[in-house]
Length: 391
Image (cartoon, rainbow, N blue to C red):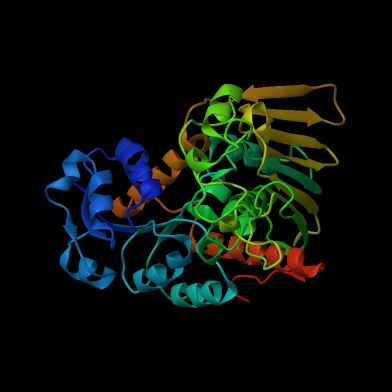
């Protein structure tokens, strides 16, 4: 039996444990938890964990007393770094949610803490290890495009309203959607191109769709416009554009302020330069719905292109100098397009000593450096060099 310790037992880490880690290791048990909301954490726990789990006041106490085999950090985003720095002192496999940091001070402190640490980390970057992305990387590594010259990546998010109606709208915690969303995508792009991003020019559009001046604390059930507003629960159900639950207003002052730079962007893009000399562009749009959802990339070189879309589960390879084009389909229905299961195999393998992480702490930190450069560029309107891990 594997005994897991968890810091911050929220919905996301609960889903990882129940649906991914236990898929790989059914006998895994949550043995210890550090979370100020003990009642909420207990409600999320599986029946097999509720009787024996122990709640601790801090991480050090749990590690000293809990006899745990591995550690998972699933706190709010701004707390990932301080708890990971504590975990770096111990020789315990760590599953760390993204983003691993939300500002430069956190990122550099995290890099310093892990520079000589024996703690092995699986960063929650499921896209890079999803079967479709790995197949694309294999083709590119085998020379399908020649030397990669360019990449175009799109992320039209059909569930993006969560960034204005849920806790993600808390700017102090999340610091915007380059860190919340693009941290996944810039990471898998560096993996595909086999090269770090070294320079970024970015733009964002804020307050054109979501955010606004409606009163604080407003929810749909108390709004006079629920019959006509496309975001009301009944209209979302009618239009097939979302769920039917009551929710906070996406157009209220609670979403943040564009003037004060505390409002998540409706859309943002980054022009990125890789150390190899290649370049590319990434765009994320968070107001898409229904069949408008798309996420994937196309990498090209002189010999051809390899492109894929996780929403269609298809990869397309085009040979530029031969009359052949091939399309391959992947399986569907898996969490994060199958990547969460792959990460679970890595983490359980680390605990058992049978595997290595394919998303080590360096990948998480390098992605944050790229995202922070994009965030700065979008705010200052200029190119920004990307800090490199180890330099």
